[in-house]
Length: 323
Image (cartoon, rainbow, N blue to C red; front, side, top):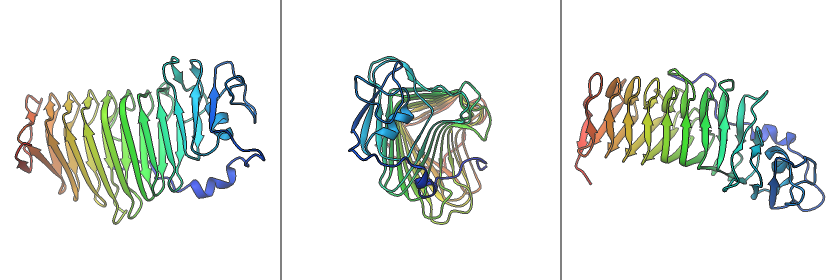
C-alpha cells in the first residue's frame, strides 16, 4: 500500500531560483499580518501589517517570526526558509483555500526549522493536503495547537535526509475516507533517509487512516521512528495506526493512548522490518485489534487493554514486562 501522490521533497534546490530576491535593506525579524492589512514589499510593521502569510514570509528574514493581529484567513502559502508563524489568542487564524491544493507547502533545505502554532486549516473537502512537508537533512517542523481538517490528507511528511516532525496539542480530523488517505502520513521513499516523528496529545479522528507510515519498497537504508504519546486515534475509516511497505524499516512506539472504533485494524504492521510497540494503550471496538502481515510485528507490554474489538483482538508477537 503506497500513497500515489506522496513524494518526499527534493525540490528546494530546484526552487531556489523562484525565491524572491533579497532586498537591499536588512529584512525584519518580526512581521505582522492582519485582516485589514495590505500586501507590498515593505509591509509587516504592527502599524502597516501584511494581508497574507505569503507576503509576510517573503518579507521576513530567515529565522524570523510572523505574528497575527486579528482573526482572518491568511493562506495558502509556500515556505522556503526557517520561520515561525504564531497565533496566540487573537481568534481564528485560518486559510482561505480557493484555487489551491495545499494549505501550507514546506520546501525544506538543510537545517531549516519551521514552527506553526495556533492555526486552523480547513480544506472544505476540495483540496489535497493541509500541510505538506518535505524536510531536508537536519531540518525540523514543529506544529502546535493547530487544527487540520477536511483535506484528502491532513499532514504529509517526507525527508530527503534526516528530518524531524513534532506535533503536539493538535486535532487532525475529517481528512480522507479510504485506505490511501490519512490524517498524518510519514514516508521514507528516498534511500538512507531517516524520519523521526513525535506526536504528543494529538487527536486523529474520522480520517481515512489515522496515522499511516508509508514505507514504499525502493528506499534502501531508509528508516522511520515514530513516538505516539497521550493521543486519541478514533473513528477512522481504515486503520488507526498502520505501517506498510517492504523496503525501509520502521519502529512505532505507542504509549498512554487510545486506539478505538476504527474501521479496520487498531494497530497494523504490514511488511518486513516493521515493528509497532504498545504500552499503556487501549485498543478496543476496532474491526480487529492487533494485526500483522508480511513479516511485520506488533509487540505489547503487559499493561495494555486489548479487548472488546468487533472482530479478533489479535495476539502480539511478543510481550515485555511493564515499566
